[in-house]
Image (cartoon, rainbow, N blue to C red):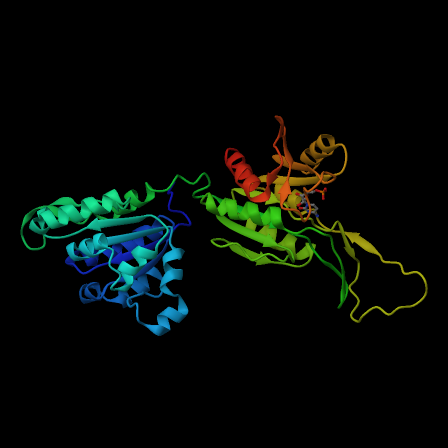
Amino acid sequence: MSSLSNKRILLGVTGGIAAYKSADLVRRLQDAGADVRVVMTPAACEFITPLTMQALSGNPVHTSLLDSEAEAAMGHIELARWGDLLLVAPASADFVARLSNGQGDDLLSTLCLACPAPIAVAPAMNQAMYRSDSTRDNLATLKQRGIHIFGPAEGVQACGDVGPGRVLEPLELVNCAAGLFATGSLAGKKVVITAGPTREPLDPVRYISNYSSGKMGYALAAAAAEAGAETVLISGPVNLPPPERLTTIKVVSAMEMHKAAINAAEGADMFIATAAVADYRPVEMADQKIKKSGDEITLQLTKNPDIVASVAAMEQRPVTIGFAAESENLEQYARGKLERKKLDMVIANDITGDGIGFNSDDNQVALVSPDGIEKLPKLNKQVLARELIARLAQLL
Ligand code: C5P
């Protein structure tokens, strides 16, 4: 599976006849799962139009450092920070020289100076220019600075010469780029995660809910996307920004979460239920605010559907994981849920522990499966999420 899933590639195109191959390169990078933004030098725009690259990449093309409108939309520093890789293909002899000099005289060279992510260049030039001492020295300097050099290939050149200096073919460049990233353990998989509390409305201004912060589910969703999964996060109301690189579906009530979960679980490889779903909802939601009257009020509640159990009962079920927040008999209750809800694993945590569970930044869990139990140490929720995703990926 491709390790470019969910990766963001800034593709720099410089002026040379090989620029026409960059159009195909955009497509090949996208086929490998990457999101691509194109940056072109003025000379590149003489060989291929920004419009072509915009249509192919589905993103605006960046061409000028001094364009106030483009800077307002996404400034050059923001753009430099956006990418997981800055790939310059083709890289002309002039661009290689400017890069090795550390110049920042156009948008692309400035991005190279500001980019915290790895940089790779794919040289493309006439064989004599490639063999020149200047170009050799410049490429050696780039290599020494940790910049990756992809190619060039040898063969017949546009000018009729034969020798080194042909840009690598788009698929070869995709493979070189993918090689820079560790293979995502969930690349090519679809993962659906529920998170946060649900709210069960009593009337237009009141609801029944719980203290779930959504932190564990959001951290798991971010870790799944980081591991390359196409990730859908179904979230109840929380005060967290939606994680990047995944689809977040916002819901309010358990019934809404149930509907969204069943839809999203169709065709999914894994379903992870971290949401603290309200077990019951008011039988009726009053149209108007319920008025104060008498000393007592009786609310009639009805049971909500069990979302994770419904997913586990689907004909083509994904690997289904539940959470169990318990205050006593952790393993016994977790095992009960595993069997009753027909789950593949239950991640159990003791909510009575200090500084763990609901609303805190740390958590300590045990993984309960039909094969046994594995206890993990107390960890920050982000770190724990990566640990859990690495283990869950093995279930697929
Ligand atoms: O039965 P209990 O609520 O303790 O089970 C917890 C697990 O079941 C969690 O994974 C939770 O997300 C899931 N759950 C659910 N739908 C419900 C209740 C719980 O998906 N209505």
